[in-house]
Amino acid sequence: MARWKLLAWIAIGVFVGNWCFTNQALPQSDTVVVGVATSTGFLEGDESLKAATLAVEEINAKGGVSLAGSKKKLALESIDIRDAAPGVPVPEALLGMEKMILEKKVHAMVVGPFRSEALLAGMDMLAKYKVPLLGTIAMTPASEEKIKKEPDKYRYVFRTCLNAKYLVGYLVGMMKHLEKEFGFKKLFVMHQDVLWARGTAEKVAEILKAAGWEILGIEAYPTGASDFSAGLLKARAAGAQVIMPVFDMPQSGILVKQWNSMKVGALMAGFISPMSGSEAWKTFEGKIDGALNAIFEIGNIPVPKVPASVAFYEAYKKRWGKEVQSGHGPAPSYDSVYLLAEALERAAKVDAEAIVSELEKSDRSGAIGRIRFDQGHQAVFGEDPTQAALGCVIQWEKGGKRVVVYPESVAEAKVKLPDWIKPAR
Image: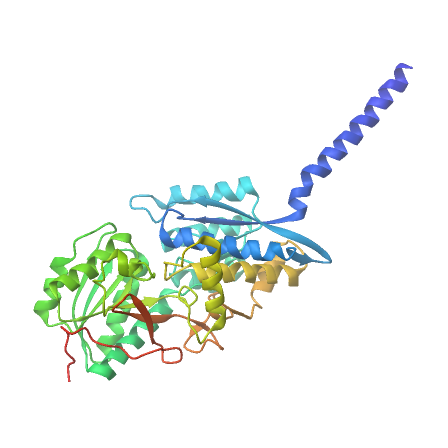
């Protein structure tokens, strides 16, 4: 009898053990875990997380992704790594990303680090744990060079958003458009003193100088600076015709208000993050009339000539009760989830190597235009949304309307000068 009881308990133990194991394994086998580790306390990070959430919800509402005949839902996990906050060291930010990789067992990531410094340092971690990332905020082309140099090690990193190289192209193109329209050739540059902004500002100045422009000054401001009047006075004294700002910090909107109040006779044309969204007109009390601002990726603003950009913009508004306010991050974050889902379905399994191989073959017409990756795993940007992803430049008009003025393929109107600024010819 004693032996029978022992065997019975062993059998029960085996059954219970198997049952527990099976049920513990179910969540992992039934879901694909997608991680978002970025600065969610900043506008771009917060809205990119919301855009990724929207895409996950849309895909799951249709049953999830199809993998070898079975459907798997996507599960989104997020963490605020605070890498965009002043004073937060890169190693501290990366601890948050590693924590999410290890504790949440993510299969892939979207959005990724905010700062290029954090992305470059984090690439070794992604290689160590073999986690594919579709980045949508950090912009340094240095990540592409690392991938080209050691493709086997860094092949897990992709970028769906605009990089600094393409931003330089759009800004130079915009300046040459202003030269053609108004004869402007005198530039003053004001930028945030971080890697991507410094590199962008200096490269634009270098290219324009070689094209015959006068570069009257380049002023750098630490993250968190909130008074730009001294730089504006220098621009005025030097006779600048165009002031090019390059900033992503919240305080940078003050620059445009000061430009308007001081009536500096140079057109403001560049990138100021808080000036991108529809609410900026109210936030800055209408004192941004006439300013030009780059939108890094369409979809963050609806562009009628690209219906998918309008569809995303409206879906985001319906889901979250307000329009996209960031000019950088949300639309490519939304597209990144779909790119990942499509790669998973082609791979037919949740395997990092297979996912990466399929991501390299991506060809998707999304909210930001047509998305294909180059050898550095950077989405190709251009001026034709049927052939490449697209950024654009908008101009604020009286009443708070944002009008696309560049590139010409999607422009809705020509640039208009504020009444206190005169053309050079």
